[in-house]
Image (cartoon, rainbow, N blue to C red; front, side, top):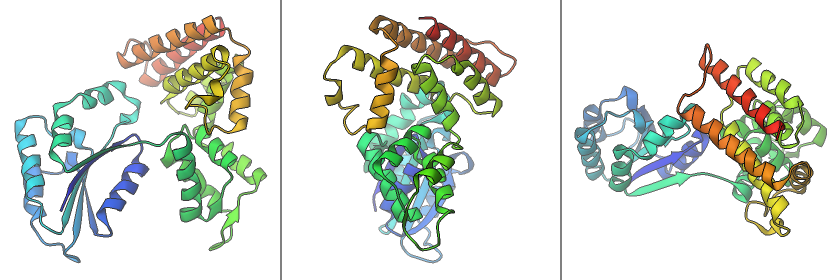
Length: 324
């Protein structure tokens, strides 16, 4: 049977892809930090307890020991998979927001060797229309909810485009419906639940910065008071300012790939924010965000704790942006 290697920044996408290729086989999950490859290689040849067809899922491959011995064992495992067994490797490449770990894994020999060894390698990500379609399908098939395209877009924005977080919110909404009944989600109910989404406070912070709203400072304090980390704040801020620059500099910006399929309410929000910035100021903002992200990656920040240091860096960046 074949071998697979999947990477994604979201655990739910990894799980869905693993479920798809396991084809209903008995799925056995292992964490690479807790397993011996030598023992696992022997276990692969052992028949399953309840089914001859098996799928073995090895999660978090970045935790495997480094070196030629590991690569040799992985190669041997892939070459000696029994006829009715699938071997699946995976890695969540978000690494809790640790850019250094993500970068190290991306360039690691382990990743390159494993990618070349397995039969199928796939990097899984969803954006734009693909993410909206996934949301609508997930809501209907798994939670019995009929969302509108607008609701799917807003859920994506509020949850920082993280399918796992979006699915948690869909689960909350599903608790409000009658069992075994597929129903449209009323707008007032949807808005009520969305305003309590874990990522909504970060989404509000990004919107405030783009809109040059001084409430961004108090929103930053709220984010860290709730013990949320900035996570993808820098990446999302950078993407937001890139969109503002496109709006300010390109009269035909709506035809660009990043705007195609974007719901009108998001476009209106961005257009309003863009009117408050000049193109040179946006370019300065992009530079400031890049510098702040670099300082975070290289740990060039000060504070009594990592969270305090990150909060101070974000507040310093906001001061720079709102004075441009």
